[in-house]
Image 1 (cartoon, rainbow, N blue to C red):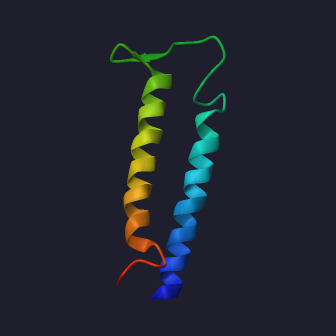
Image 2 (tube, helix red, strand yellow; image 1 turned 90 degrees about the vertical axis):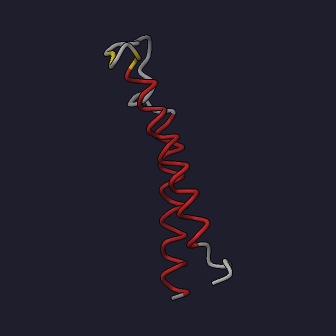
Image 3 (tube, one colour; image 1 turned 90 degrees about the horizontal axis):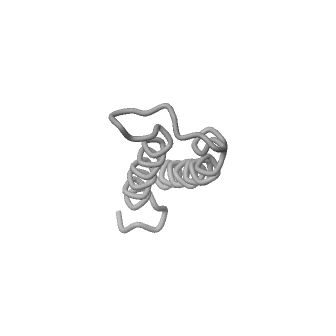
Length: 71
């Protein structure tokens, strides 16, 4: 079980790094653009919200799969 926890922990850490880097790429923050819009909100903001929710979910998963957790 410990090996699986270590694997899942490393996957969570890797995903966090990828999401952190993705946040500042032109995919999320296009230069000088605020369109297209979705429900009156720029798509850039929606992407930021989605990344934030994914980071919170990864943090939650990480608390359960941390190799030193008390299970």
